Image (spheres, rainbow, N blue to C red):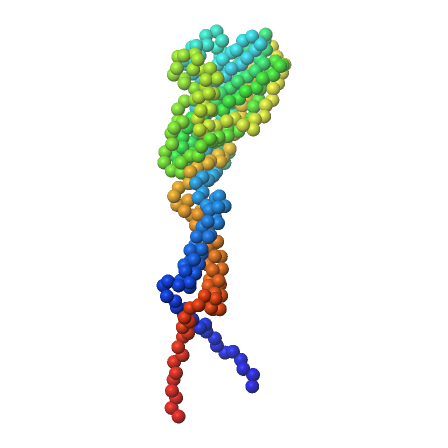
Length: 310
């Protein structure tokens, strides 16, 4: 009559040895390698401690209604600004311009996505504009992790060998970093004016000095991905027109990770490799002890004998 398996269960074997023995030393080595080897493997991959990371956030940007305009001819540099002290220093080179501003929030989330600035500068017909420079000042805020606030700028610059009638510029106010931000707290290191509007010293308003101080910051904004249209042939009696459209794209922010983020990322890398090593070294130990490659005392489970009445 054929026999069929109707039930099975594992048999537990106990391997015994003295405290000071080859078997004990082998087991200690297996335990150490099981937990240390995956740790060394992920650490050597140069990504175990993720001390820096990126996130994306739509910033809160507000135009400060402060601007500085410089129009250059072959002989003269005309200036206009919203700063009283600077205007007082310009004297005969001061322009009287008209500026219109419109910020738009197309998705109605309470955060502006773009700024349109339209400037008209009345000039004599004999004035041939060859270059235009415009600085726009902004309040810039990030709040997803740390509460970061700064005052920043967009610098628009274009020149041509031909006399211009108008300049149209379109670009993005891009977030720039030299060092990472903190992951929490309040950061107002750069929440001071880009242009010292309260100064009465003319050298403080030189573009070279303004840019030097601005570039010394670790966090700034720049007018990037810009497209320019320079139109020539200004009709008699018509002003020089400058139209600037500035978009506020999401900022890709580099930041210092916190403790729990650091541990989470390390744990995610370590555990999968640890499971592999646990399985491998368990198979190694079974093979070594089961085949008595290292001698131990094998204790098998005792099968109780049950007497039957006859």
